Length: 200
Image 1 (cartoon, one colour):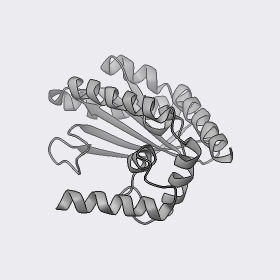
Image 2 (cartoon, one colour):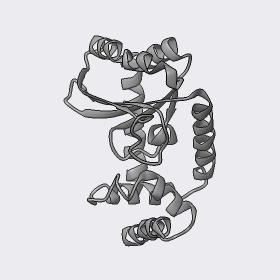
Image 3 (cartoon, one colour):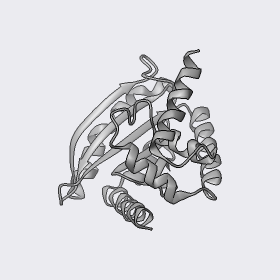
């Protein structure tokens, strides 16, 4: 249960950070709504990583870009420090097959110097809704999965050079859901086979 306890503790910290920084209120005021997704929403956290989606029409790039000063202000007002912000226009230059949208990659330091990674994605409203539906289906499937195995494999995979490149949390989830094994080497083989199949 150690991994589950750690995941729960990280999730509590993530929710506190979001609340302290006023991010939900800021995003709702700008874009009408937001959605907390990924490992925080799934309660499968193994590191300080928060994923948030907002609906942003592709024609409203400037509104998404202009969000940063207010993100900085609301984070600073909570006693936190925005130490890095990276913007990607994934309409103009997609980096992969995750989808076309706008992206802010934020790094936020807390008072105890812990560094949090916050991925903020702006999707076309239709894409936003579809991705939420995909996320909800994954959450339903994972509700009956071996969560201890998932957390163990995620923690082990984080030490690999290919983590977040050819091995992602998504791969771990589907590896376990598909019943492909229980070891890190089996996970690596699963991911290699997926890539080889995609290149075939």
